[in-house]
Structures are given as C-alpha cells and as structure tokens.
Image (tube, rainbow, N blue to C red; front, side, top):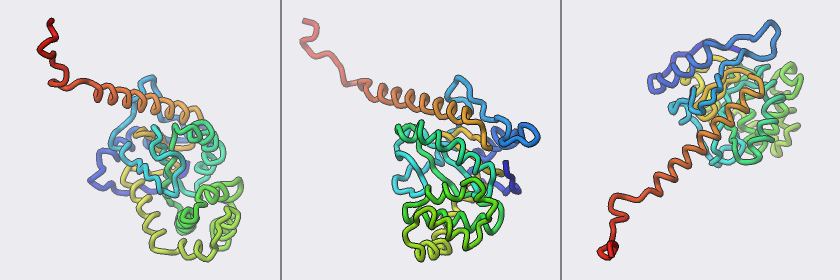
Length: 263
C-alpha cells in the first residue's frame, strides 16, 4: 500500500480521525515481503455494527448528480474510496476487486461506490485527478478510471500528452472542453475538497475506504469487502425494519376504546 506524510487533523472531525487512525491505519503493513496487498485490518465480525462509526458513515454524499459515483443514491450500502491514480495498490483494487463488487452488489442496487480523488504523489497525481474529474463532467469518469488503472498504465506516467490519450481511450467526446476543464478552478476545487476530506479523516495512505462507516485500509482480499458489504446491508435492513415498526406503533391516544367497546 502506498503512503504519504500525515497531515494535521482539523478539530471538527477529530473524533472521526482518531477512530479511523486507530481502527485502520496503525495496523496496516505488508502481509509478507513482496505481497500484493496489506494485512487484513477490517475485523469483520458476526455483529454487523462492529467497527462502524456514525461520524464516518456521514461522509457518504448520496448525491444523485455525482458524476464520480456509481450505483443508486439510495443504496443501503455506500463504499467511499479515497485513491490516487499513481497508486499501484489502487490499480490492483480497480482491476481485481471492484469489477466483482460492481457485478455482485452495484448492479442489484445493494451498493453505491463514491470516488474521492486523493492525490498524494505530486504534480502528476494532481493532474490526473483533475483530468478524471473533467472526464466525469462529460459522463466518462468510469471509462477514464478504467483506462488510467489498466495494467501498465501507471508506468507510462500521466504527463499532458498521456492524459489526453487516456481521455481519447475513455471516449471523452469534447477534447477541447476536457483540456480546459482539467486546468480549471472547478476541477482544482473538487480535487482539493476530496483530498482535504481524506486528510481530515486521518487517512495517510491509498487506497482507503469507508463502507457505511467502517474503515478499511489497503487493497484487501475480495472477501474482506464482500463480508463487510453484506454485514452493512444486513444492518441497514434491520435498521429499516426497526424504523418501520416504530412508525407503525400506535400513539398514546390512537387506540382508546370507544364507549360501546365493553358491550
């Protein structure tokens, strides 16, 4: 898993940052020399509420107009991914794990994936993050995402010409608009907002994830994600049922017997 220097946590999310740091990041290390991922740190227990924090769950935007999200805005489970296109482990997740999650959970309405640009490797990371946002403005974010994370893409770098080639490969229709948007103030602001959100939560590495308030760090095995998603879906179903049951309960004055009830 790739790492960057820690950033000071803003006071407004200090509790969430501490939780994320303690639960996830201090435990993250390579499973073995040369391993493709990091050790499992999301303890997926039988209790679907274990390791879940409301402070973190609130970061799901659930904005139906979000061009960097995939799946229903009202899906019971939201996976937020903080990632860098120059991160090798992010690419591994994008190629090996994410397509399975999309087919198994996004397509049936269980899961929503919300992308957050978290560039931590300098100017090229910043540039390709802005480019991904610009591709999204023309409805081609996920195609750009797939092209940028293709096997060997990272090794070619993300210079200006390479980014233009990726946009063409992704089918971005208006190249001139794409180039302008990539360097515009809106792209810079969007990327900065995502980046600062990740830092404020205590994220110091990529990829980092939140699944309905449960933090996961690193390109963990597929089973870690499937078990976490299914636990979150189970908890969401139970919470919905409990809410419906509470709503259906009669109020104090709703079922008083009428004057003829004893006859």
